[in-house]
Length: 481
Image (cartoon, rainbow, N blue to C red; front, side):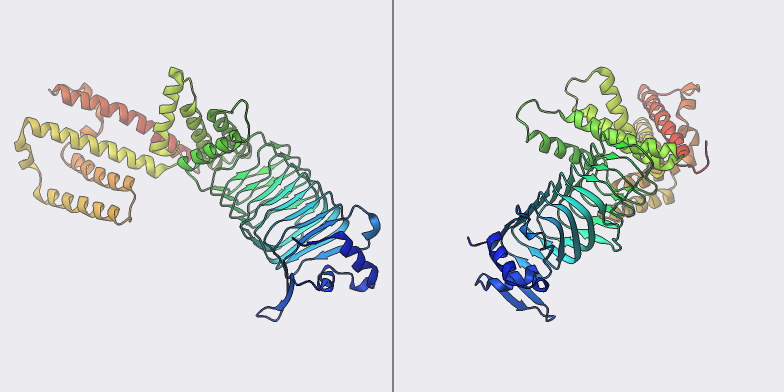
């Protein structure tokens, strides 16, 4: 493989005037068969380079060469630049097919403009940046990795919505100045793990469509996540917020199954990299639980009880996963696990008022249906006492609900709640006192053992559901309790 080296750049610089010292001019000057120059459909000049670029600026001879303009260049092979100081890098409509390496560089300014496609791995390490300016969507399948870097200013002048398709890692980095990630859409995994933010950092209205890793980050000043959407469970375990944390209007667009999937994936990825003692799944679940405890406490401190309850919900998701994956469960662990399961299924831990109302209706309707069946076994003639028009309407209602569920118009819970409502209306019309299960236990009506057992079971279930209902209603109320 032909390599474009520092020797060729040295020879080029020694033969040209200062005003022609550009990287594009250097590539054109090589006159290599592996470098093609052509016009695109808009008449813009494109340079396609099919040679590896390896430039080591260990010598100070090239300090006067202070800009790499990669605009409209397609690199088919790897590009490596190291030990270059006081330099500006410009990526504008640049395509990197086989990777880019930058390390041990200082006082770097980086511009990303228009649209760039990075298919190979972009690895930038141990470098110091004066500023990074991102006004470009980033596309392609390659990872973008900043590791052990420092940033004086990060995208302070950014002004547009940015879409990033690549996996992005800014790990063990230091953000000395303000960092601006406002209106970013991260379509792939992003990691800031073990990074330090010395000044304000803004993620306002950004969207994280995949896993976001902030574990062991340190935020020394304001951290603003206003209006952020997390579509998968983020990891903020052991993150340290020394000043204000703004989580107002943050949305969590994921459920219990997604949280469990992310925790299992994190455990698998971590343990695949170590050979000695593995970290168990319940410890990872506890780490994730710590993330949401931080958010919950920050919002509670501001008096934002409604939003904090949503983070408490996800905190309890993680607690249930932790208990479920715990190797040696005590009796108390098992009771806690099933209690969490019950409240998650019925009310999303007292955050979903419509869901708990649906379950109350299902419980009443199920009890009414079973109680009616027991009565029919004792005396089949009871059916003749029912209103025929009511029976016909009930059949129409059940069939309509079934069709609506079959075509995906309503969810399964809505199907059962609708059927439960039909049976609840029958009870309300014929014997409404049955709805209040505990009262029926103390009257003097003669019943069979099965009827009494059903009443006791119904009463216990209703006590749990009504407790959850009142707690959910109180938590979702805009009126302070």
